[in-house]
Amino acid sequence: MEKNIFIVGMDKFNLEKIKNVPAAKNCKFHAAIDINEIRNVNDFDIEKLISIAEERINAVDGGPGGIITYFDFPAQDIVPILISKFGLKGPDFESVLKCEHKFWSRLAQQECIPNHIPAFATVDPFDENVFDNIELPFPFWIKPFRSFRSYLAFEIENRKQFEANIEEIRNNIQFIHRPFVKLLEMHEVPDSISKIKESCIIESSLYGRQCTIEGYVFNNEINFYGLVDSLKENHFSSFSSYEYPSSLAQWIQDKIIDVATTFIRHIKLDNSAFNMEFFYNNFTEEVYLLEVNTRISQSHADLFEKVHGVSNHQVMLQIALGEHPTPLGNNGKFKYASKFMLRTFEAGTVVSIPSKDSIEKVEKEIPDTIINVLVEEGQALEKLELQDSYSYELAEIYIGSNSRSELKAKYNRALEMLSFTIQTNL
Image: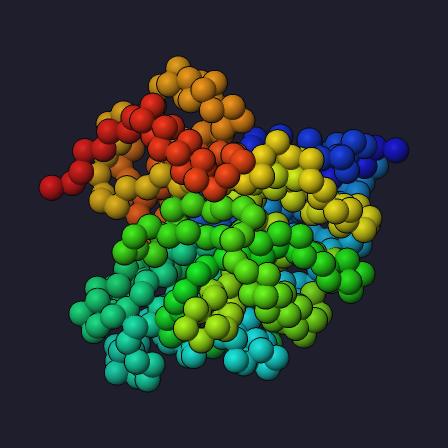
């Protein structure tokens, strides 16, 4: 019997991925909310988005068989609300918020894994004396309570840097913070979380090897299925690539699993996929939790598909269908896979991008490579939506190989064949 699966934030790339997994055989996919309704928009009207999603779900014969997302705000926050309204399998709203609300999440982590988190405190960016009230030593990060893709996240090394970055936060934070607070107020979140005047968290800086572990909880059973290395640009906090599988030693991976398990159990997250970002500090030989997301990472989907033969969309879909997720297997074409993020670090205007022919030549010479160009000719880079604080992403390039060194060699060859021209601002 065919089941209707509704996607919050449906897009072409992920729709193709999810249609290819075995669990999709008897599923029909619908957009509860289209990606264009939550990306490159002027504002997030949370009540309207929820209402639109409900209307679309109610309009389909047979009702919903599951509601899913692979995107961050506001999709990730809306899904548990819709799941509850329609009585479907999925996580409850509070457990999701204890992951997504950076301050609430740190409070919960402090209760169960205090030795694996940075020092933290809250700040009100609109307080005229905000800097004078900060007790954390340099360097530290300042971030909004709710954000994604490191939007408005800055590492602070001195007061001058703080003063410059706090102005950018003041000018832009309400874009996500205002609708997020509205969401909290709509769903009886404790006043100690929803009504505090602070809107940012500061955290002591973490150092070391960064990675992301993916897993799921189904009927209170926790499982992990992959650890992905997150590699950064030299001298910057922007990611250069994700590489799978991780090169971290097994004993380090076991530590990460222990800490992740403790936190997931503590907040009682259930019937949900999740991904958790960690640092491994080589000097202390300890692991530290950076953040938690209650969804699969769609950035990792093609990596799992290249190595296992099936993407992590399989896990998400099986949970939504009420099925215990099956192992991903080892039927991929490659032993290793990477997502490379081609970036520029100076503002400017896009003069030219790779032609369709040049992209097709790369894909022909390097089979199974996927190239997603993220900019258009004539586009001002500083107007790109929700970039991290240090760079502008031009393209995503997914590559598979049978050795780690071959991954980089294939990427360098692809770059030789792809041309971007940026006129930098003077």
